[in-house]
Length: 91
Image 1 (tube, rainbow, N blue to C red):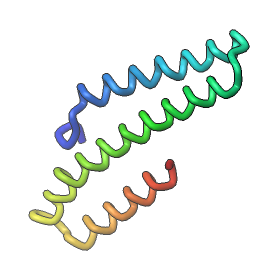
Image 2 (spheres, one colour):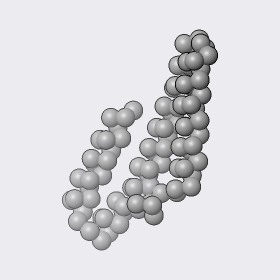
Image 3 (cartoon, helix red, strand yellow):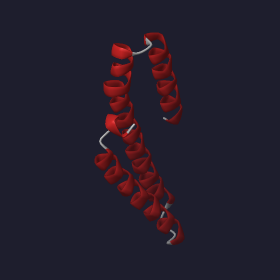
């Protein structure tokens, strides 16, 4: 799986998201207005969605491409459809 994605980029993005989530946790303790917390929740949600997009794109460009070229085309398409379904549930 690592070959189909830029692991360093994903790790950097995930560390930033973890920082955002920790900041949200602190905001709750500091009695920050709800609107401000919700803006930060939305920012973290958007960043996590982008991570999913990057993983899905890497999956398409590597795993799906390889499966179509060298494997079982029907199974590859079914698996990709499942991946899209799982990702779209998260949005």
